[in-house]
Length: 178
View 1 (cartoon, one colour):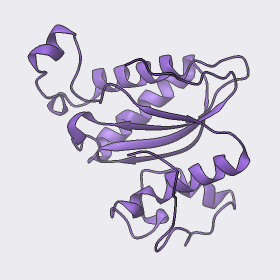
View 2 (view 1 turned 135 degrees about the vertical axis):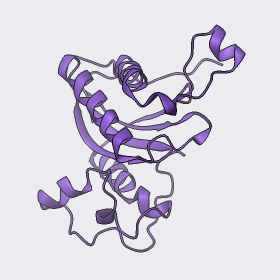
View 3 (view 1 turned 90 degrees about the vertical axis):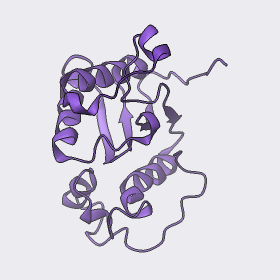
């Protein structure tokens, strides 16, 4: 099956990346710190704005805005995943299957990821809310503020959200992919 991706220069995109077999490779603060370093390293050579992010034990969601003359998010993800894989605790790397070994694939990430080009300001806002509410949705936190691996605090400091936002049930029908 051939997947079609929306490559739009300067576009804003929502992404979901899942770990291989939903292994909780981001369960430790150390692993999340390595992922942060991977983002910083790649952004230094291939800039993009990281508008929102949340890292959960077995997946992450984020929103990026690419530079006006650039549409290549795929290379950035390849570089981030490779950087993380090379620099993470070796204990996180499971033994690859025979077919993965033949293809020289690692066992940290699902092969593909979900991406959605954000169409307008409302679409952007709904996906930012989805990103920040995700730890509550999955039962990892009682509020968005209680989850440490998220851009939510940055949004509170900027006055965009109240610190108590995201407590209780919220509806995100049609938003996200898990």
